[in-house]
Picture 1 (cartoon, one colour):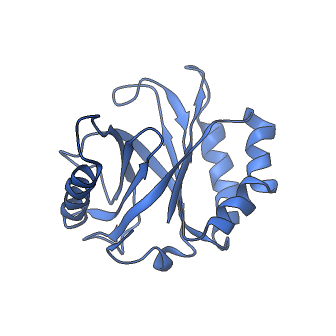
Picture 2 (cartoon, one colour):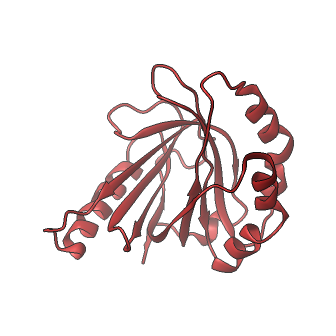
Picture 3 (cartoon, rainbow, N blue to C red):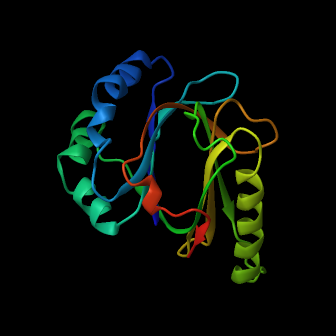
Length: 193
């Protein structure tokens, strides 16, 4: 599994209805994309819970060929044409686990990036993060959770989809506008590494 995300931060007065319409009319195009485990079409709007307007889709790829086909194909080129070329962040997958509410459509996503301390043993930090992900997956209202790592920057990515607004899950909160999940079953139930 590979996790990937790009963030398109928009002006404070940007009409986020434009993004909502874009997802409503184009989101279904990846509903059958080969190699895509899932794509969460995420937005956050400037206000109480976010300092910015942002479109920040997050992908979990079941196969690297799918990620490459997307990045070098017309789908990503549409983003580049409309918004400029964003920095694409990516992480190596450690765990994907369906949650207690796996059959529900997610309305909220929480993403937390956590730097592994220079003094921490990487394996110990990863094991603690795996335990946290499994705990989150068992929480009522959790649709699915993923854990990934960027070993270049020694950063963990915690990502959880929720049926509703969760309490007690720290991180950046997003509204889920659409979920494409053609190969979600290939991400594996509780599969790690």
